[in-house]
Image (cartoon, rainbow, N blue to C red; front, side, top):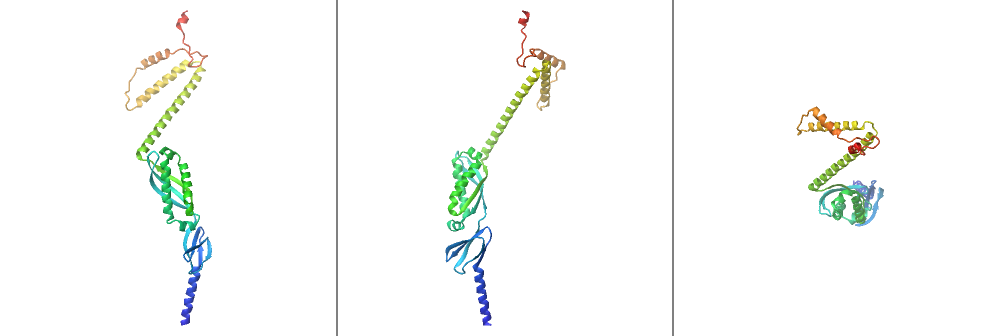
Length: 279
Protein backbone atom coordinates (compact mmCIF):
# COMPACT_ATOMS: atom_id res chain seq x y z
CA UNK A 1 0.00 0.00 0.00
CA UNK A 2 2.78 2.39 0.96
CA UNK A 3 4.72 1.52 -2.18
CA UNK A 4 1.68 2.27 -4.33
CA UNK A 5 1.28 5.71 -2.81
CA UNK A 6 4.98 6.40 -3.26
CA UNK A 7 4.79 5.32 -6.90
CA UNK A 8 1.85 7.63 -7.49
CA UNK A 9 3.70 10.56 -5.94
CA UNK A 10 6.76 9.86 -8.06
CA UNK A 11 4.57 9.65 -11.16
CA UNK A 12 2.90 12.97 -10.32
CA UNK A 13 6.25 14.65 -9.74
CA UNK A 14 7.65 13.30 -13.00
CA UNK A 15 4.51 14.29 -14.87
CA UNK A 16 4.69 17.81 -13.49
CA UNK A 17 8.40 18.03 -14.32
CA UNK A 18 7.87 16.85 -17.89
CA UNK A 19 4.87 19.11 -18.36
CA UNK A 20 6.69 22.16 -17.02
CA UNK A 21 9.80 21.42 -19.06
CA UNK A 22 7.98 21.29 -22.39
CA UNK A 23 6.85 24.50 -24.07
CA UNK A 24 5.13 24.81 -27.44
CA UNK A 25 5.18 28.27 -29.02
CA UNK A 26 2.53 28.94 -31.65
CA UNK A 27 3.24 30.44 -35.04
CA UNK A 28 3.43 34.24 -34.97
CA UNK A 29 4.35 34.23 -31.25
CA UNK A 30 7.55 34.38 -29.23
CA UNK A 31 8.29 33.59 -25.57
CA UNK A 32 10.86 34.82 -23.05
CA UNK A 33 12.60 32.44 -20.67
CA UNK A 34 14.23 33.51 -17.40
CA UNK A 35 16.68 31.43 -15.36
CA UNK A 36 16.78 32.24 -11.67
CA UNK A 37 15.16 35.61 -12.31
CA UNK A 38 17.38 36.72 -15.20
CA UNK A 39 16.69 36.74 -18.95
CA UNK A 40 18.05 33.59 -20.56
CA UNK A 41 16.70 33.27 -24.11
CA UNK A 42 13.83 33.90 -26.54
CA UNK A 43 11.79 30.97 -27.82
CA UNK A 44 10.67 31.06 -31.44
CA UNK A 45 7.58 29.17 -32.74
CA UNK A 46 7.97 25.42 -32.22
CA UNK A 47 8.64 22.74 -29.56
CA UNK A 48 11.06 23.60 -26.72
CA UNK A 49 12.44 22.15 -23.47
CA UNK A 50 13.16 24.27 -20.43
CA UNK A 51 14.80 23.27 -17.15
CA UNK A 52 12.18 22.67 -14.44
CA UNK A 53 12.35 24.78 -11.28
CA UNK A 54 15.30 26.95 -12.39
CA UNK A 55 13.74 28.21 -15.63
CA UNK A 56 10.33 29.61 -16.41
CA UNK A 57 8.50 31.33 -19.25
CA UNK A 58 7.72 34.91 -18.20
CA UNK A 59 6.18 36.31 -21.37
CA UNK A 60 4.43 35.03 -24.49
CA UNK A 61 3.47 37.68 -27.02
CA UNK A 62 2.64 37.98 -30.70
CA UNK A 63 4.94 39.38 -33.36
CA UNK A 64 2.07 39.89 -35.79
CA UNK A 65 1.00 43.34 -36.96
CA UNK A 66 -1.30 45.18 -34.57
CA UNK A 67 -3.62 48.17 -34.88
CA UNK A 68 -3.71 51.02 -32.39
CA UNK A 69 -6.73 53.31 -32.81
CA UNK A 70 -6.05 56.83 -31.58
CA UNK A 71 -9.28 58.51 -30.52
CA UNK A 72 -9.97 62.09 -31.71
CA UNK A 73 -7.58 64.46 -29.99
CA UNK A 74 -7.35 68.25 -30.05
CA UNK A 75 -4.31 70.01 -31.48
CA UNK A 76 -3.48 73.66 -32.20
CA UNK A 77 -2.13 74.61 -35.63
CA UNK A 78 0.60 77.13 -36.30
CA UNK A 79 -2.04 79.80 -36.99
CA UNK A 80 -3.91 79.06 -33.72
CA UNK A 81 -6.79 76.99 -35.08
CA UNK A 82 -8.03 74.12 -32.91
CA UNK A 83 -8.35 70.85 -34.84
CA UNK A 84 -9.57 67.40 -33.89
CA UNK A 85 -7.35 64.65 -35.30
CA UNK A 86 -8.20 60.95 -35.47
CA UNK A 87 -5.54 58.44 -36.51
CA UNK A 88 -4.66 54.75 -36.70
CA UNK A 89 -1.17 53.34 -36.08
CA UNK A 90 -0.03 49.94 -37.40
CA UNK A 91 2.85 48.41 -35.45
CA UNK A 92 4.47 45.15 -34.43
CA UNK A 93 7.02 43.80 -31.96
CA UNK A 94 10.36 43.00 -33.61
CA UNK A 95 12.39 42.41 -30.44
CA UNK A 96 10.34 40.89 -27.62
CA UNK A 97 13.21 41.18 -25.14
CA UNK A 98 13.43 44.97 -25.57
CA UNK A 99 9.65 45.36 -25.60
CA UNK A 100 9.24 43.39 -22.36
CA UNK A 101 12.18 44.71 -20.35
CA UNK A 102 12.55 48.17 -21.90
CA UNK A 103 9.08 49.70 -21.56
CA UNK A 104 6.02 49.15 -19.38
CA UNK A 105 2.51 49.07 -20.95
CA UNK A 106 3.82 49.42 -24.46
CA UNK A 107 0.50 50.28 -26.15
CA UNK A 108 -0.09 53.21 -23.80
CA UNK A 109 3.47 54.36 -24.39
CA UNK A 110 2.97 54.27 -28.18
CA UNK A 111 -0.37 56.11 -27.89
CA UNK A 112 1.18 58.88 -25.78
CA UNK A 113 4.11 59.17 -28.17
CA UNK A 114 1.71 59.44 -31.13
CA UNK A 115 -0.23 62.26 -29.45
CA UNK A 116 2.93 64.16 -28.56
CA UNK A 117 4.27 63.83 -32.11
CA UNK A 118 0.90 64.81 -33.61
CA UNK A 119 0.70 68.01 -31.63
CA UNK A 120 4.30 68.95 -32.35
CA UNK A 121 3.92 68.47 -36.12
CA UNK A 122 0.51 70.17 -36.33
CA UNK A 123 1.76 73.09 -34.23
CA UNK A 124 4.43 73.87 -36.82
CA UNK A 125 2.06 74.26 -39.79
CA UNK A 126 -0.90 76.49 -40.71
CA UNK A 127 -4.31 74.87 -41.07
CA UNK A 128 -4.44 75.02 -44.88
CA UNK A 129 -1.12 73.16 -45.19
CA UNK A 130 -2.33 70.45 -42.80
CA UNK A 131 -5.65 69.96 -44.61
CA UNK A 132 -3.97 69.83 -48.00
CA UNK A 133 -1.03 67.57 -47.20
CA UNK A 134 -2.37 64.62 -45.22
CA UNK A 135 -0.06 62.16 -47.00
CA UNK A 136 2.99 64.25 -46.14
CA UNK A 137 1.85 64.40 -42.53
CA UNK A 138 1.52 60.61 -42.45
CA UNK A 139 5.07 60.18 -43.75
CA UNK A 140 6.56 62.66 -41.27
CA UNK A 141 4.74 61.07 -38.35
CA UNK A 142 5.82 57.59 -39.43
CA UNK A 143 9.47 58.61 -39.61
CA UNK A 144 9.47 60.23 -36.17
CA UNK A 145 7.54 57.41 -34.49
CA UNK A 146 9.73 54.74 -36.05
CA UNK A 147 12.87 56.46 -34.80
CA UNK A 148 11.46 56.98 -31.30
CA UNK A 149 10.23 53.39 -30.84
CA UNK A 150 13.34 51.64 -32.15
CA UNK A 151 14.80 51.27 -28.64
CA UNK A 152 11.51 49.67 -27.50
CA UNK A 153 11.88 46.73 -29.88
CA UNK A 154 8.85 48.00 -31.82
CA UNK A 155 8.44 48.74 -35.53
CA UNK A 156 5.83 51.32 -36.56
CA UNK A 157 4.72 50.15 -39.99
CA UNK A 158 2.45 53.01 -41.04
CA UNK A 159 0.40 55.90 -39.70
CA UNK A 160 -2.93 56.90 -41.22
CA UNK A 161 -4.70 60.11 -40.27
CA UNK A 162 -8.38 59.20 -40.52
CA UNK A 163 -9.90 62.65 -40.13
CA UNK A 164 -8.97 66.26 -39.46
CA UNK A 165 -11.95 68.27 -38.21
CA UNK A 166 -11.76 72.08 -37.95
CA UNK A 167 -14.15 74.10 -35.74
CA UNK A 168 -17.69 74.68 -37.03
CA UNK A 169 -17.08 78.33 -37.89
CA UNK A 170 -14.04 77.35 -39.98
CA UNK A 171 -16.03 74.62 -41.74
CA UNK A 172 -18.76 77.14 -42.63
CA UNK A 173 -16.18 79.58 -44.00
CA UNK A 174 -14.54 76.82 -46.06
CA UNK A 175 -17.93 75.71 -47.42
CA UNK A 176 -18.75 79.29 -48.41
CA UNK A 177 -15.39 79.60 -50.15
CA UNK A 178 -15.99 76.36 -52.08
CA UNK A 179 -19.47 77.51 -53.13
CA UNK A 180 -18.10 80.87 -54.30
CA UNK A 181 -15.39 79.16 -56.35
CA UNK A 182 -17.96 76.82 -57.91
CA UNK A 183 -20.21 79.72 -58.89
CA UNK A 184 -17.26 81.63 -60.32
CA UNK A 185 -16.14 78.61 -62.34
CA UNK A 186 -19.69 78.15 -63.66
CA UNK A 187 -19.75 81.79 -64.78
CA UNK A 188 -16.37 81.40 -66.48
CA UNK A 189 -17.51 78.23 -68.27
CA UNK A 190 -20.71 79.94 -69.39
CA UNK A 191 -18.76 82.91 -70.72
CA UNK A 192 -16.41 80.60 -72.62
CA UNK A 193 -19.39 78.73 -74.06
CA UNK A 194 -21.06 81.98 -75.14
CA UNK A 195 -17.86 83.15 -76.79
CA UNK A 196 -17.55 79.88 -78.72
CA UNK A 197 -21.23 80.04 -79.70
CA UNK A 198 -20.80 83.58 -81.07
CA UNK A 199 -17.69 82.57 -82.99
CA UNK A 200 -19.49 79.68 -84.68
CA UNK A 201 -22.50 81.91 -85.36
CA UNK A 202 -20.32 84.53 -87.02
CA UNK A 203 -18.70 81.89 -89.22
CA UNK A 204 -22.07 80.46 -90.19
CA UNK A 205 -23.62 83.86 -91.00
CA UNK A 206 -20.55 84.94 -92.92
CA UNK A 207 -21.09 82.12 -95.39
CA UNK A 208 -24.91 82.39 -95.57
CA UNK A 209 -26.41 84.37 -98.50
CA UNK A 210 -29.33 85.63 -96.36
CA UNK A 211 -27.34 86.40 -93.25
CA UNK A 212 -29.39 89.45 -92.28
CA UNK A 213 -32.68 87.54 -92.36
CA UNK A 214 -31.17 84.70 -90.34
CA UNK A 215 -29.84 87.15 -87.78
CA UNK A 216 -33.27 88.80 -87.52
CA UNK A 217 -34.83 85.40 -86.88
CA UNK A 218 -32.30 84.54 -84.15
CA UNK A 219 -32.82 87.87 -82.39
CA UNK A 220 -36.58 87.38 -82.44
CA UNK A 221 -36.24 83.83 -81.11
CA UNK A 222 -34.05 84.98 -78.21
CA UNK A 223 -36.51 87.74 -77.40
CA UNK A 224 -39.43 85.32 -77.25
CA UNK A 225 -37.45 82.87 -75.09
CA UNK A 226 -36.64 85.65 -72.65
CA UNK A 227 -40.32 86.65 -72.46
CA UNK A 228 -41.32 83.04 -71.77
CA UNK A 229 -38.78 82.65 -68.93
CA UNK A 230 -39.94 85.93 -67.45
CA UNK A 231 -43.54 84.69 -67.49
CA UNK A 232 -42.58 81.46 -65.71
CA UNK A 233 -41.12 83.36 -62.74
CA UNK A 234 -43.26 83.40 -59.57
CA UNK A 235 -42.68 87.11 -59.06
CA UNK A 236 -43.13 88.09 -62.68
CA UNK A 237 -45.75 90.56 -63.88
CA UNK A 238 -47.07 89.51 -67.28
CA UNK A 239 -47.61 92.31 -69.79
CA UNK A 240 -49.79 91.58 -72.80
CA UNK A 241 -48.45 93.27 -75.93
CA UNK A 242 -50.12 93.83 -79.24
CA UNK A 243 -48.45 91.39 -81.66
CA UNK A 244 -48.51 94.03 -84.39
CA UNK A 245 -46.76 96.52 -82.14
CA UNK A 246 -44.15 93.92 -81.25
CA UNK A 247 -43.63 93.09 -84.91
CA UNK A 248 -43.33 96.75 -85.80
CA UNK A 249 -40.86 97.31 -82.95
CA UNK A 250 -38.79 94.33 -84.01
CA UNK A 251 -39.01 95.47 -87.60
CA UNK A 252 -37.71 98.89 -86.71
CA UNK A 253 -34.96 97.26 -84.67
CA UNK A 254 -33.94 95.00 -87.51
CA UNK A 255 -34.32 97.74 -90.08
CA UNK A 256 -31.91 99.92 -88.20
CA UNK A 257 -29.22 97.26 -88.50
CA UNK A 258 -26.50 98.04 -91.02
CA UNK A 259 -26.18 96.03 -94.22
CA UNK A 260 -23.75 93.13 -94.18
CA UNK A 261 -21.23 92.79 -96.93
CA UNK A 262 -21.52 89.08 -98.05
CA UNK A 263 -17.80 89.03 -98.83
CA UNK A 264 -16.77 90.10 -95.33
CA UNK A 265 -17.01 88.49 -91.87
CA UNK A 266 -19.83 89.42 -89.53
CA UNK A 267 -18.65 92.22 -87.39
CA UNK A 268 -16.86 93.87 -90.35
CA UNK A 269 -20.08 95.42 -91.62
CA UNK A 270 -20.17 98.20 -94.13
CA UNK A 271 -22.33 101.14 -93.30
CA UNK A 272 -23.63 102.73 -96.48
CA UNK A 273 -22.63 106.30 -96.34
CA UNK A 274 -25.65 108.15 -97.67
CA UNK A 275 -23.58 111.25 -98.11
CA UNK A 276 -21.22 109.37 -100.45
CA UNK A 277 -24.08 107.87 -102.45
CA UNK A 278 -25.54 111.32 -102.98
CA UNK A 279 -22.20 112.44 -104.38
